[in-house]
Image (tube, rainbow, N blue to C red; front, side, top):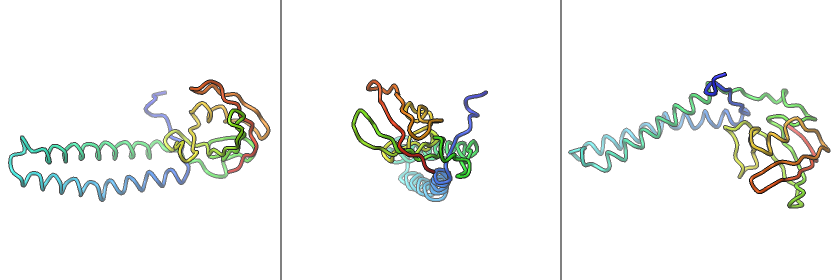
Length: 160
C-alpha cells in the first residue's frame, strides 16, 4: 500500500477543526497575503523589494498548508462514537491510567496522528504509549518503551 494514501483517523471534532482552518486560510489568509503582494508591488521595483519577497513566501506557506489540509480531509476516516468500544481501548477512547513512575493518574484521549496534541492529553494511536494502550482493557497493566526508558501504566477506566 502506498504510504501517501494511508487513511487518516480523525474524531468529528478533529475533522471540524481542520475544515475550519482550511476555510480560514482560503477566505481570510489568501486575501490578506494577496493584499500584501499588491501593496509591495505598488512600491515599485520588486527585484529588491523585501516586502514583496516576504509576502510571496507567506503566500507559498499558505498554499502549502491549504494543500496539506485538503489532502488530510480527502484521506480522513471519521471515527464514529458508536464504533468506539466501551471496554477496549480504541481510537477515540478516553483512557484513565495510573502512571507508576510518577505515582499519578492521567487521562488520555487516543486520536489519529493528525490530531495528536500532547499538551491537551491527546495522544496518537501510533505513539509508543498510544499504540501500547490500543486493545487493552480496564485493569490491564502495560510497560511501554519511551525515550526516557520504560513507563508502566495500569488502565483504570475507559470511556468514549
